[in-house]
Length: 519
Ligand code: GLU
Image 1 (cartoon, helix red, strand yellow):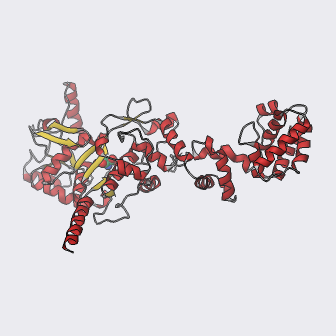
Image 2: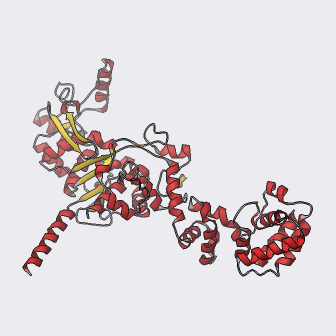
Image 3: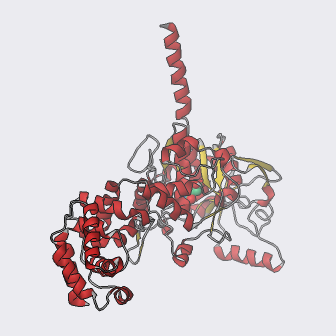
């Protein structure tokens, strides 16, 4: 009994240690989430699940001017379509909310005051024009203006470091606009540690005194992000490389508050298909591939995402996982649970990851080919209104006959529409090639004969046809080409006997007659 109890305490301790892993995805709702954002969310999700941790969604909407209607809902929908939903976030309280920064203003004000009281932040009253003039003056001398130790108390800048206490209070009370800046320490080497990049050293003299609180009464990203990561007990910050330059300031802020900083991992950039430069939303338009997981409807314009373009979430996820990570083996196909099992931040690369639209198509083909016909049929029904009244078993049967040639679910309709509707037109080249002087006679004889054929299976039809063609004493192609044209509308498509078996003899005869009338 005693031994058992000890064991359960041991297990419980391990569990508590494990539940201490908390990561967050912290997008700003400035528009739809693009694949780069989804990759960041995915790596956070994988890390959380691997360590029995919690995946938090935090909406960083302190810059109200840049917030876009619908973006927040889009982010949640996109994560859920990808199969990587958040555990805690807006609408899913885990005890660390609110999860929207615009609802946490009082928290930031309180923390800002702590820094002001400690003398680690200061008020700055400089007007835009004055700062612009400083910048220009510096530029004229070939220098860069930095608002820091070098300039802050030289007299040209107006802040609480140079003004008297009374003057500062007077300005604040009279409603003069001000910002609050961080007092970057001078002559300090900042030691940073990143799980992907290793150890980094930054000279504090190169940093500017970043604004922590804006004149609109809102905190900046830096203050809100650090305060929230601390209060939400985030253990690991996993984010894109573009945030690496902010790390020194964040580290200084943790020290200023006297807090232990989380561990950091900055993920490599996602590069354009050419490998040159960062992938942008515009590259998708230019090169014709989706950059959003699901469609984005801005009200003015509609942009299809991977979902609407015929991709499956497992393919998208598998592809994105390889943008900056690899398992160190030859294995390329990973379902989500296998990714969770194999994922390790140690195997995240430093080098930028090239976005290859061909590769995601290749992944999609693999996943599509491995889906059951029933699943593909469901997807086809969802994508094609015309199929809503059709028996899903019939659709599944048809899908099984054509899916081999599909890369995208949206390819399926084009590959099998003639199983559901008679051709409306005939391919001109096909008609020229297939329709000869004897075709009309042959096709009318065939439609009469077809009625008597045993259509129990494609095989019985095949042998009935072979026999009939032999009796006519004509070449196989002379019958099969116009027949295919009648059934499909072009000289392509599935096996003719499979088609007749599926659509039925009566429909086949109807289509043959329709071609005779038109040709
Ligand atoms: N709000 C930032 C973004 O939009 C978050 C960066 C971070 O994860 O710290 O990506």
